[in-house]
Amino acid sequence: MLLTIAALAWQVGAALECPKPVEKAPVTFPQELLNDFSDERMFSGYINVTDRDFLFYWFVEAKDTRSNGNANPPVILWSNGGPGCTSMEGATTEIGPLLLKGVKTGDGYSGRLSSNPFAWNHRAHIIFVDQPRYVGYSTGSGPFVLSSKDAAADIVQFIRGWRRLFPQFASSKFVLATESYGGHYVPAWAEAILEFNRKTPSEEILVAGVVLSNTCIDQRLQGFSAFKRFARKQSLIPSSAHPSSMASARFQICNYKKYMPNTYDYRRTSAGSCCGCMGYNYSSFDRWFSSANVRRALNVCGNAGEASFGGCGAGCITFPKSFDAGETVDNVAIIAKLLELKIQVLMVYGMKDTTCNYEGGYAVASALRWKEADLWAKSSPKDLFLNGAVAGKVQSGGGLTWMQIEEAGHMNPADNPRAALFAFNKLFDDLDLTESSSHNGIFQTKDEDFMPSQRIGRQDPGTWRITTLLLGLFFTLVLLIAVGSIVWRGFVLGQLDVECVDSRELTDMLTHAESDAF
Image (cartoon, rainbow, N blue to C red; front, side, top):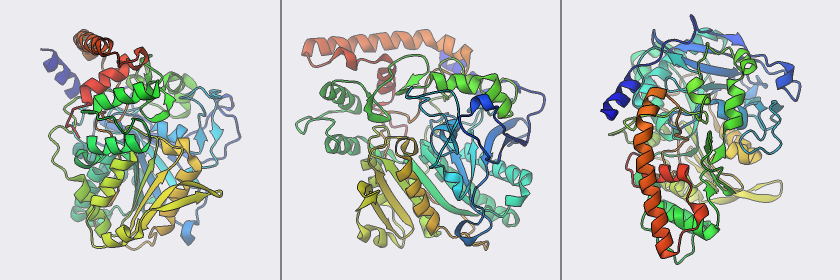
């Protein structure tokens, strides 16, 4: 009965949050929300992907309109992962021109936006899109999509609608960019765009490149074996340790390090099980995006976003377990096909991430098969120097660039923005921005490490209160039994520190550690 009600909750969307969502309007933040003067040209609004469903976007124009000697800079289409997490995180903590510094860590957080000297819009336009349906500020009254493939069909309609609103950029090429679970999104986007181009060549959507930042693509390559290699190389477990599962590996890490690591950056302690916490504490982030001033500045439709930013959402809505269930798409093969189409692919990984680790990501890169794969394989990883110091490693050839970044975790542009911008500029310098059509098909991305023990993202309570109330008691009971069992085992064996029992992250581990969902 509970599962039936839950399924119904996901099949029927909420009512539209306003009479008519704004299509396009300037984004102007009041001075009390700004630390610095901002001259950015920004717009936001909603694009209908069906007659009942609207995806929210925040568009930032490029500062340099003569990039690569071309008067038509490319457009980065950025989505965060989850599945179900808002791209407002990417906009205000990673690659956007205005940052909420310290909003997730509390380090110097002021509640005001500050200029980002490492923003990615110096050479490209950026669209931050909240997708799939109902994520972030997106709204509607239609059904949810239950797969990355269905979400990709919406993305094609989104791009068509965006070009109608911004005809001056209609001939711009796109860079498909994402992180985390987006390693499933972008291959699906690519296939959908390829099919659209085949059927509608008069509206061809040109893709110049792909950015996959700490993404999860293929469990076969990025699974438990890769995680054990990563944990040993990073000295997270002793060489004598032999964990038998992802969950046991995490417990061994916690006991060995003597603290519960933040799953997105093991150098930090997890924020614990507070409301709005998952690795980091997102409570200030949620409050900021729920505030009336911010919603007005971003032209938000009514109360849209309440599920993502209200309660304990941490910027995410809870996706059903059926999302992408039974997925048969070969993401690695799609990426290889994109490389065959001469689309530049950047795979960049922060090395302190336990969710999508760099070892698994490199395994994906090494498994790609395309005509020029030997050029990449023969190049071998080389030290990456920035400001006279080693900042990671880089390997490039045949259209694929792999980069692993020191001093960075899952959200590597937030942790090491200089290195992340260097990676993007490396991709940008290799892009073909000529206006002629070079291909009529898929576009590539390469992705890396993911730790299949978790469904990448903050899957906290967030979406529909009815479902939460009905399922809450059931899962609380399951959690209590599981926690009690593990604590008792640790007590008996004398191996489990009390601080390693974090109910929120433990729930995630127990739910996803042995899952084959990816």
